[in-house]
Length: 302
Image 1 (tube, rainbow, N blue to C red):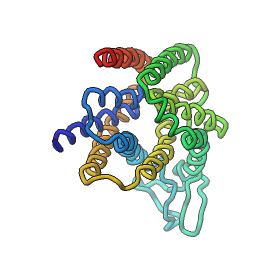
Image 2 (image 1 turned 45 degrees about the vertical axis):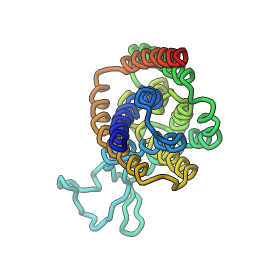
Image 3 (image 1 turned 135 degrees about the vertical axis):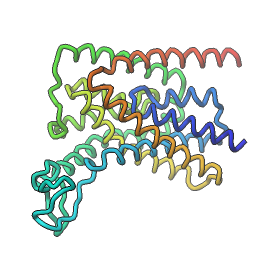
């Protein structure tokens, strides 16, 4: 029985690693997977599990974008060179760096993190006040299906409009604090199950005139503090009341999500170089209809 449950955990981790970064709603897919797999776990643990394994996906982003996310370095010499022999003073990442003793702080990376924090505020506030209410009343097939379909239509409409206009923002440094706050408001909409955190922020970014690549990358960065925050909240609520098997299920799910996420992020960034998000919009609409049909049939059968 334990081996069968671990197989289910692997499948759930794969689904999480794929759907966390593609704008197609990890919640909608988790609902369907759980409907067919019947993950045998306590309701409280299952609720926590579906959030905590997302940390594996978030750690994959940190691993892949580490050089762009870590702002600190030890300054040993003014003539210190990087691995390619270039003077660090000429490296854009260290342009106008701040110095605290022998610690150099990258100004562009630091400012990026300030924007990420600004973008995190709306979702953080709504999450603290509405998390319990959403868990109790909004995690229903109807809500998830409607969110899938609505955002699917939005993706198609936004991409249709973008066919006749060029993005106004193509570099991270061009995103203002006002832009970051608006992106944070879009991210806050993801508290509704089925919306997709990446989907909401990417739709918002495209609507604001941000390029596809930058909208996706900034969405990745925005997910780091918000997902760590949600995971901590779930851990505090659940406490340390889980068995050895449940502990290994959490770790195993995270590891699988981490590995799968690396491949999915690479795929997505290569895909959107020359293609739009329309296909994801169509997929969301189809999935929304499937969710309605599956649970309607399930209700009739009962």
